[in-house]
Image (cartoon, rainbow, N blue to C red; front, side):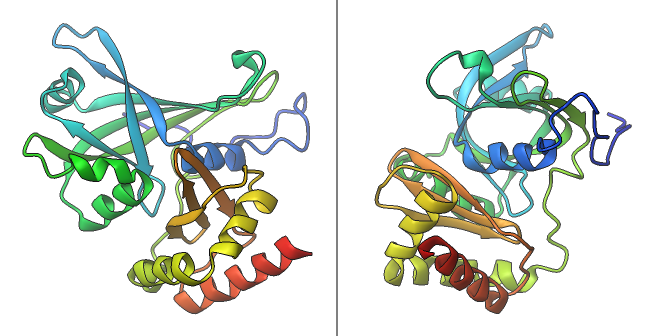
Length: 250
């Protein structure tokens, strides 16, 4: 697919100036843990199923799929797919934001992708090593956001994805950072979830970190804490997490 729009969408003067389509798209991508996966059957017909997802460091969706499932057989034949991430809630479901991704999926044997998926979806550890299961990355090619009435945007993948070229040190330290936060700073994680992400009280744990934010899980609930500025090293991440804890307590 040729991408014609790899930059942030131009501002529509009819939309609320406070509406940030890229920021809202990033939030939905990182915060939602299940998605509708549309693949193509052998005849070319669309075939939609439900799947659990996580995200790689740059935001690329990670899937864990069984070869026994038709959607996996479809992707083996044709990797083109689409993912719909919809935010639930009370009231009219059509008024809630949702994100549609056009993508091309391929298997991955990346240990990092595996780790991020299983921390995000710990129940999947029960079957992740079954011989018919494999991890996939869905490389994003186009983005459509419907954020509610008069809050729509279309753009390419570049604005949505997180730049990680200079974040090797942060990525290498991810496991240590998460272990430290989960073992020693559960109170701070609960504050992040409730005060910064608007989540419900719970036993919140950190499941992933990247230059733009921290991913949290509590049972079946998920939350995303966006950083006000990018971090690229473990020390920058430490300072950021301390800063956010102070903000949460103020």
